[in-house]
Image 1: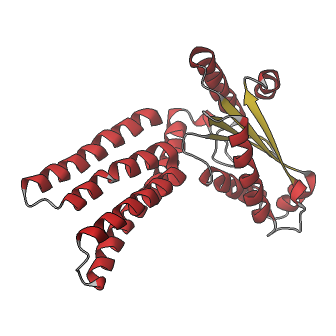
Image 2: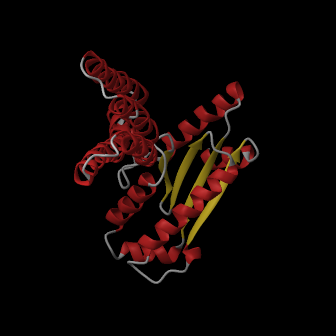
Image 3: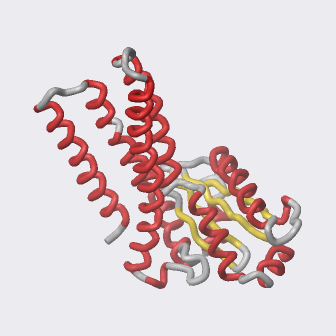
Length: 257
């Protein structure tokens, strides 16, 4: 099963379940605020399944910020302890669904790809391998030719000083941990893979180079922070390259082979 089909099933059943609880509430003594609160679960589900942990977290926080003032306005005379419990419980549901759901969907995406064909997955990092990343690139390039959807590619490269240090500290395990850091810091729709011994590659759909550059700087800091455990590396030990399609079409085609 492809992740897109899995995502569709989750959305159908998840949104269906939410609408079912709303219908049940309407059949009884409906609290308007709590009905709206249930509706707010829908964007959290969409954010988690389509954009992963980051999307789930953002939509959960937005849902919480929408719910809190509504709830406080309706029951202003209630005991503070009761209000705190009510608001805290709803916020906890949003955050658990957004963060945990997004993380689970991230893992399922790569698991399903591995089930489809194990040769798509890099044995060291458990991310996509170079041939599959190249295949995905061609798919996105074809989509651009048809629908003019831009995308960008990020290259994260570590220099020889880093590689030498990692080889002394369980290289495979460290590379897998770096891959996990990168994967957890991007959207679920972003494709993450390994390009070489010292390189990771990311395809960012519907993202132009300014947005990709922001993501690249964030990832550079995260990877560098992790590497500081194994040596006092300067920031330039991690190099970020941003390429956009179609403006860097030739360079990307050479890179992806």
